[in-house]
Image 1: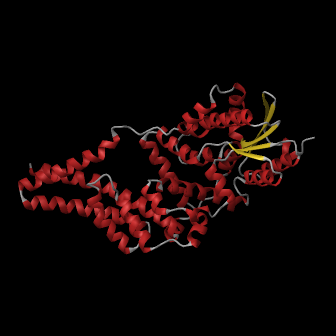
Image 2: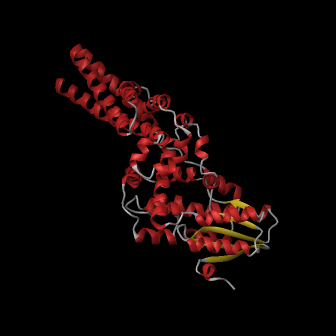
Image 3: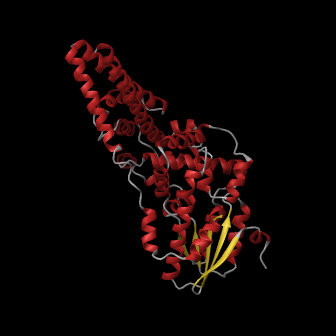
Length: 402
């Protein structure tokens, strides 16, 4: 007989050929869900446990200090700083849940991992890499909606408000990533496809592959309740070619081809503006150059200062931004991050405490790992704004002269 813990959790039983798959829908902030997972695995009915985790999220659970092995400069150089910052911000939101409700988000996944290992059951990670999901989400929404998402992530760090009862109910019946991002947007419509529908298809393809490749009688799939119906129906309907489907869902679409030329167009326009200024008079030309340096460098330096960068990092931002803005192959953030890393190398303690420190803005500024990421992002953002503001200022000055 199923216990109260098990019967209280939504579930579906489906079959693929001779294999029975029990899909258990869990709440990521519920102790009852974790207890249900424990009881099902301890029943010894299953020979495979599949969980809604990707490799990176699995690693963060089994090795919380894995960040200590991260090469921060490589992260910056390979343009992964934004992804790391987003992951830390999401982790901060989940930490707020843990502190408020005394329940560790994802506890049911920890239980599944530990018991599968203890009983020497095959453990399958069936979710898509969170980095790919976030990138596809980013490509799926228009630029003006991206501002809402980014500002919401920032708000999740600086706010000290408690998570509302409504948000908790969403987490109990939905998906952690969807619920976390949904609070940052005016509508969850743009979020549904990359966060839910695509992952339903991805996990279904992984489950079908698992059954086809392994000799297993019973599989327990532990997923968020928000994936239960979609995963069950997609798996039952079947997927013609799972390898192709997985490759399709792991592909990150490229941005608009036109967008990559915009930085070069801006550089040409700025240089043409300087040329017109000097052709009129050297005084006007140098005045335009001074505007460029003060606005571009000043805003980048302001970003570095807000991030808590070293005074030499702030000075570096002021000097580097006007030059890097005229060379789209290198950004101001790369230069400021390199300087900050040289001046303040993160310690082992910084890596160990980064997840706890990033629950508040002051922690981002004091933890050397988080601060390095923040220096990169804010000095880059300052330089971007400085480029546009200074550009308009230059052409406004030229308009008045000509």
